[in-house]
Length: 578
Image (tube, rainbow, N blue to C red):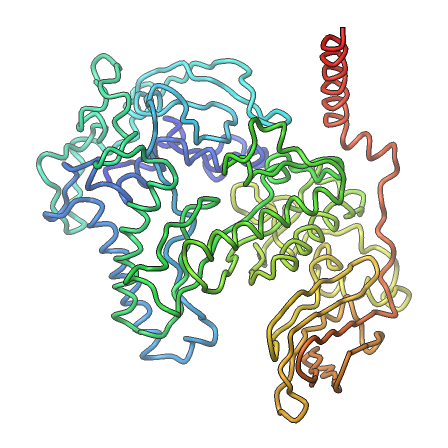
């Protein structure tokens, strides 16, 4: 693509922890801002929509879009063919193939390159517009806005002059890339911004020439999320589907459109079959950005993105119960969007999780993980209520309290080998079962993460839920008669939440057995409405809840914000009355 990664930091084209001037103090959740910087904007635009927006970007006689996608799919095809021909990993260790992790629109749909896009919801630190990013990418100085994240949205705090001093984000014009075996078309000049070459802006004057160059698809439609998925993601999906089905007709294909977007309508497409799985991602945006779990309020981010509120303040949810239902409703809505657009097919949330480094990593000093436990329990409740298949992000074997997951400051790993003050309770012989399990596995927020779940259901699943505080699991099914069958309904029962045989089981019909080695309850039941309940008789120690003073201190900003908002509301009401 003609970009030079060695110059990304200097030109603000991409800012990552490994190249940051102070890696240990890399700003919280700074990495997502890269989506709106030159390197990612260019890469995603060329990959998704090079045919339409970069027609002169030709390599080996192919447009860059086809070149990149064809080579990716060729690599995947080679890789999975060898796995299928030479191993027994498929349908065992490997359950399927996903399209591409967290594809992004890049510049497609950008309304005005001289302004920040309305789709840009996160602004942190030095934040160039698309045009400013292009100017900086050519090594020219530019004054750029600086933001910090406020209570509900980014807040402009000033401007800063950035001067790359002639260092460019593009490979020099005399760079020899023939070593890679490809031939770049003469119309594509090295050392010069690809967008300037397409007449988007003028390098000599720094002036924009086509402010809305990326705004519309070739058919004239505004390239918003819906149009992007309908045209560009679908175009890639069709190529992906065709390539993978040449390898195998039966393997599962995971369809993952851009994060938090409405999936394209594929259910009546010839590029769909019964082995397709919808694979969205979900994270609680407010907790991720603020690195704080609030029991006072949260925001329906998906609702804002879908235009369900007149303004963001109307999307605020107050109180713990409202917060739990807010996250549940978002996850459920994503599943339903898949059913409506992808079709009646499984929904597998291939990424979801909660950060552990909340409140400036205070839990690592105090041993009080109550916020992490509540956050993970809220997420677990949402996943159970929506009945959605999922995998947790992430298990990182090298996670430490100092550097987290060793990736741009993220700290999501359910495992950590970092020093854990919460486990310093004396010799193993003197501590209870739950502390021993935590110490042995160095997991975090065990009681919220170690949740029972149905492995297989003989019949149809109605509901299932785990009440963490009470140690009670409840399963409700529309059962098939499996009283005389070898196979019944199976429930995974984690040792942390249900140690040894310290639990009681109630069923509406039939019999059950517990396999203590595999930690699985097998239940043979009758037909129709059936329920099972498992109650632990050995609960872990109570969650060390913060005092009211600590709660108010942790949520000081939020409390002050609501006091101000309430005062303004009362003042407005009094004016109306007068």
